[in-house]
Image 1: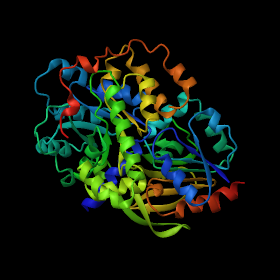
Image 2 (image 1 turned 135 degrees about the vertical axis):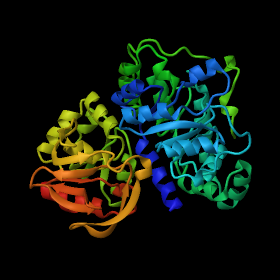
Image 3 (image 1 turned 90 degrees about the horizontal axis):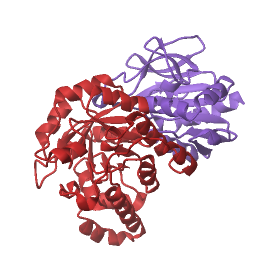
Image 4 (image 1 turned 30 degrees about the vertical axis):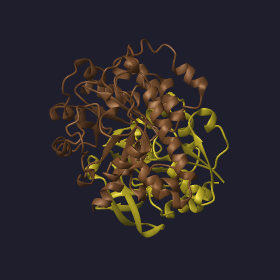
Length: 291
Length: 193
């Protein structure tokens, strides 16, 4: 039965492919996101840019607020729990969330252990900045992976380097001979079976999205060209001048990420993009949480 | 034979792989210029139906695709694809391609915790076929006698055929079972030609 749920949960992620998952803080924003073509929304009290600005401990959102968003839209609703916070995850499962993001954007609740996600019926997405992290999270039961680009910065550089690194590590595994895989598993600190899967299939066993710092249609297209199967957009939409238009443009950019002419049209007159912060200017590297 | 696969969002690659395994050539439709290529049929994959409808209309694909289906282009829709083809949702007219006389219930089994696997009989296609339902719809009722009910699970209609149109609430493309794709290729596409 558990095996079965893992499979169904991986398959829900397959349905999200080629789509954009948007951070929303109110039912009204959720409706704007759905109307713009989001394939799912991430319900949270504060978007990452504001979490970063506010500082302090950042926790799971109020279940009542999440329920309000579940009632407002018909697309899947995701929500974040803290890394290692089993009880927050249980609460999210109790309100029948469609996907839990065990997220470094919130303050970690456990400095060593992630949640044993195989114990849950609802699916989990986790962040990873390299292949080893991705495979460890999958071994723990994550059924979807995303990059750990610096959230709330509007700077795509980290998401790009995570995606590039993961793709190049995958290519390296594919090129290895079978007897080299045992050592590769040791170096990656990941289970041999998953290493072997990547060697044989040339991809992760679960869907892999880009997340963190995506602010424009061009950013989204870039991540798709680098091998992302879809895109999370956090602060980039509702921190911008014209959220409706920007959201719809990013949705279209993900579908037609190889058509530069269309991307040019989509990039016109979007109003002000979110104010970015450079990687060097931020004091807290959230990607360093949970390895 | 060349089959167009709507590739706006969702699990379209899985359909392409299945057709390629059956020796059928496929191409992806992401915009109007793709759609204008010659084709013998169309597949509409699973994914989010609201996203797909939104993209169909913003890319100017909604009207031409609807027109082609009305003129007889064979089409196979799974899950979100079934929703796009339905004329009604909960008894109300729907926005979408609206070419099939069915009244659909979206997210009929609830949220992701309601997703499930089943095996079932599909009339004229096979017994004990694996069926994967992911936040799936089902069909409340058919709206004309032209619609043939091919399968029911727990008393709900989950597969239908209306002439050259085939639709399932479940995802054969997520399994290794080729029966439905084979039926579409061998029985529906030739009969429309």
